[in-house]
Figure: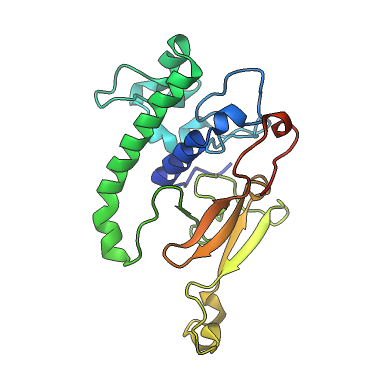
Length: 239
């Protein structure tokens, strides 16, 4: 597996959305036990990769783990939930708290961390783009060949692109066709290269789709607003 090149901010925003939507309580994975934060989420770089998992040292979340804890078997369980770097972690919460308390603590930490990262980036974002920054449940996606190693458009998914890997392709123009009806692609100095291609891996394509929103550009949208507890273990339901 290639090194994790995801954006930490996008991964944390996705994780918060996953948590707030109650996915840990309705996620059809090991329903006989409590769900583990990060490990049982689509954000995990080794989700469904039991046969050939990548080293946790490559995970984008590793930068949140204290150096002295990065050799642990499951490093993300040792991310500190306070500024001092000591105290509550998932590892400690699993020993003394129930699922609701754990999710409340993690949710609060995620909101604080996301806000901090957004404040750090806001100056750079304003300098490079006049577009509003996606907030809340809106997630920007990654064009297929945006980076050296093409991957799934879901910013929180680490799945590397492969022609035979299934999934679903999308393509969007950066700008809508003008009202005059003229061909924006033909008139563009870059021609057809202005069309951007996106790919959702097999797993993500069953859960999400891509849509164009004028204010934000191409964004990720969930197909199923809710999972039925009775049917969730069999298949994903779509809306």
